[in-house]
Length: 164
Image (cartoon, rainbow, N blue to C red; front, top):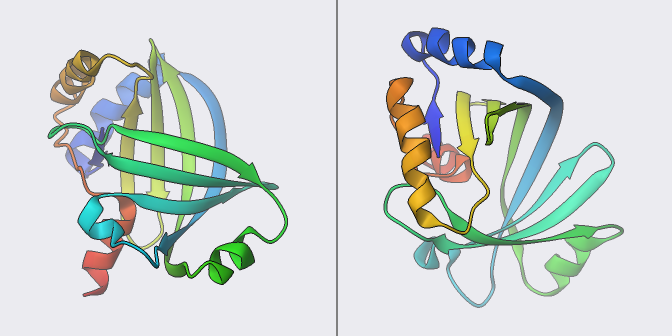
């Protein structure tokens, strides 16, 4: 689940982060693509290349699995070389790039990311790797304790809305 960080929630989030283990800080550039054969906006899918450090990762994201969280089926492949050129030759086109600075923390069995997204501001993302959709309630409880309002739209969707 993800939520925008505002002045009201920032203090509560920082209290949790003081108890968390800092894992890493990194810069990410996500380049999203549209498909020549179907409308990802209509099917609630996404295809992106994430550039971070010296790695590039191609990710396919399936439709959201529930009405509350951003849980989806995801498939990733580390890429190299001319992956963008391959996608272009197959008819895929760039939609938008999302740039962010991400700080990652471990708190209990949650993975917490604090994202400073270019042209959007700060967001918190909380993940819990699980096959059990009932575990979403655990993240909801954490959000409630922090007075966070969940945001289901992706950074891509939020940036495209802002552009309009």
